[in-house]
Image (cartoon, rainbow, N blue to C red; front, side, top):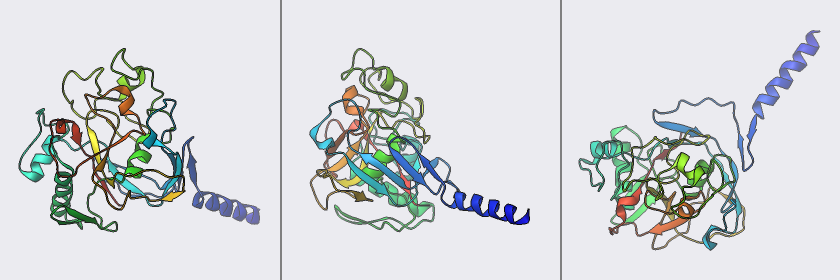
Length: 287
């Protein structure tokens, strides 16, 4: 009897060590690990997924080829886009065109977002991720401070185990009208926006508990924009150099088709232009 019990204990322990959660587009391992999660963040476990246009809509050429990506380390990502209240408390000003404390900050450049990350890290006693020399920025990936997500981390977190156009289903109308039934539930876009951004967190979250991944404001990522290839990738960080930094997720003024999980655009990291009122960001940090 004692031997049987011992074998049962060993079997259960072995199962827990190998614990794994599987979705249709993602494999998340080490599900037994308990990590204190900072307020306003969720823990995203390391895992693999298919990056690119896995949905039903034809999409754009730069969303292909679909390729396997593995995120090798857990990371925290903010539930919400950085709000105007949060930005002003750190930077001392609010540049947003649409004013509202709980609306996402916008009319910011990529380099503004980088400075915000470093200043917030300093306030919270964390090691800064970014070394900034003019417009030249380097990232210390080991530092525990705040940073922008890589493009791969962003899509991994957005899809949350799905392979649809949106994390709650497939695209039903590519433009503003008639209303897209899926996107209307989870994001602000040209079919329901009312000529402005909206307070964060008003729509339905994805399975990871993240809000506004589709619509409201485009979100800056770390990566220089570049083409995909078919190779299996581990923690990709984008092109080595380029002219534009990647933005993801779509915004309040965009068509349904441009708010899909796999859509990718780029913008100059230090440039202001008339549509900057649709660019914002959310934060990431390592456990």
